[in-house]
Image 1 (cartoon, rainbow, N blue to C red):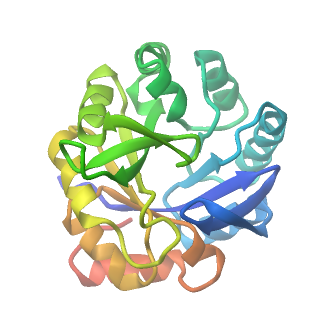
Image 2: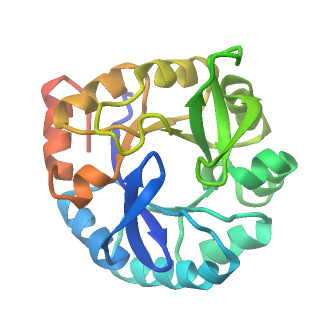
Image 3: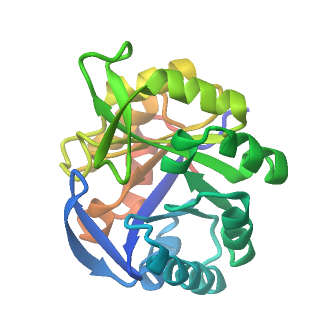
Length: 253
């Protein structure tokens, strides 16, 4: 049976508002997260992803409130990431309505966190978020970054993706920092690399600018395609992306 490809709008949230920049810099206000989530659900979004891009202690309470209000009004799966450091953080997010939880920086700092979350809640709850940059010195040509793409590590992206899935990550959200917000298209080389090393679904993120950018990402190995600015700006709708995928023979919901 062929699994349907998913189209996922991403809401980067800071202090209770949706923001968007280029290469994670110069963030601009894009609107209310609950209103936008409801708008995308009505367009046929398969899931909604919230990423708390500042993830400070002060913003935490705001994020819980946003997730809870969204879950009360929007009936598609919600993935929430940013600042998740413990199984208790996961429990609280699930308690206010998240269906899946993304981890990034905290898992790099302490990989056992992946095992702990998967053991307690199941792999289906855990999305490993990878903010990836090109790096000539890395074996795969890519390294992972932390702190919203601001801190580059020496950790090879392919090595980390493989380890994380072995530890229990149920999905990989792979964001190209180089392509993020540029609208120049997904990094297809990065998607192919992740597809080679990962035994779990891969969500492609970073670089979508037009409907023609989405089918190549799926052809390169993505199980789902995620975008932010093209949806927030009204350049594209979820339906238009699904139509483009269907036109290339991709099964969508």
